[in-house]
Length: 246
Ligand code: NAP
Image 1 (cartoon, protein in one colour):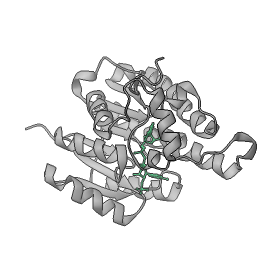
Image 2 (cartoon, helix red, strand yellow):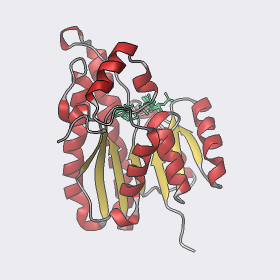
Image 3 (cartoon, protein in one colour):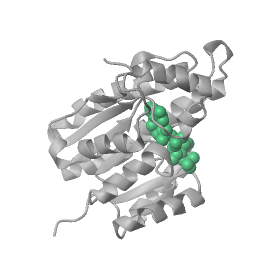
C-alpha cells in the first residue's frame, strides 16, 4: 500500500478551512489542521476523527515567527512531511484608507500574505525532493474587483495571486503545482458580521442569488490538491456565483 499523503490546512478550526480539512480527510489524505488556540486544535481532531486515524489539530498563529517555528518543529518531531499545503488562514480589519491604522494594514498583510510566503517557503523543499506537491492558496474575489474599505485585504489577496504565478513557474518542472482559489461571498463567520442591509445589497449583486457554501470551496480545493490536477498551475479559480467575472 502506498503511504497516505499528508496535507496541512491552516485555519481549519472554522469556516472554509474546516470544510477543506474534512473534504481532504474524506478524500484519503492525512490532515494536519491548524487553529490559533489549543481548544481550536482539539476541536479539529474531534472533527476529523470520523475520517480515520492520524489526523491532527495543531496550534499555529501564522503571524508569529515563534509559533511558526514551533509548528514546523512539531511536524518534524512526528516525522510528518506534508506534500499538500492549503494556505487558508486569513482575517480582515476593514477601514477606509484615510482612517486605516498601521496595525490594521500590517496585521492583514502578515496574516493573509506573509503567511503564504512563510509556509510555502518552508514546505516547498520537501515537495521538490518528492517531485510532487500541491499548494493551494485561498485568495478572494476582492483581489480582482477591489472593495472600498478593504485596501489592506485586497492588496494582500492580490499579492497572493502574483506570488502563486511566480512560485508556480519556479517549481512546475518538478511536479509541484501552485494555484489559488478566489471565493466570493461564502457563508462563514467572516461574512456573518455584515449587517442585514449590507447582506441584502450584496445578495442583489450575486447572479446566483445566494452566498456560496464552504463545501463548494472545499470541493475545488480537493480537485487542485489531487493527482489529476497536475497540469493546472499558476491559476486562480474564481468561485463567486457570478458576482465578478474576470
Ligand atoms: P473564518 O470563518 O473567519 O475562519 C478563519 C480561520 O483562520 C480560523 O480557522 C482562524 O483560526 C484562522 N486564523 C485567523 N487568524 C489566524 C492567524 N493569525 N494564524 C492562524 N490562523 C488564523 O474565515 P473564512 O471565511 O473561513 O475564511 C477562510 C479564508 O477564505 C480566508 O483566507 C479568507 O480571507 C478567505 N475568504 C473568505 C471569504 C468569505 O466570504 N468567507 C471570501 C473570500 C475569501 P481560529 O479559529 O483559531 O481563530
